[in-house]
Length: 131
Image (cartoon, rainbow, N blue to C red):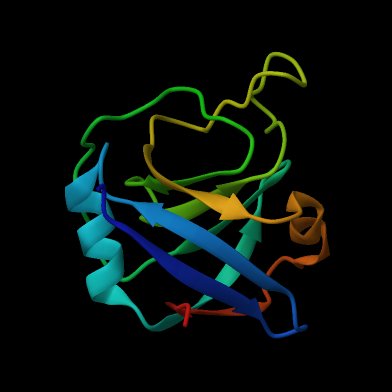
């Protein structure tokens, strides 16, 4: 069975986002995230993407130039964790989600993605393991 863990991201305005972290495709990246938890950071927005700085750095592993709706990915240029809930400014259409540059996909957002629209630029986020 493939290893999976859950994390919870909570905004200061009360938005809770659950994410399943998978260790199959980019295990070094997933491990680095789980070792860094818990931490606090600030939300940034870019199109239909919430991203936030993380307290670790790791190289590209098995990187992707496009992602799927609901993907959780690590962006080494930040370094940041990215939550994709729709197209970004670089997406060529509403059906293709294109990050700013390649990312390591490490998981999926669980539940209704529209909740991410409630996250505000600059608000504090707490990232922790989900019970």
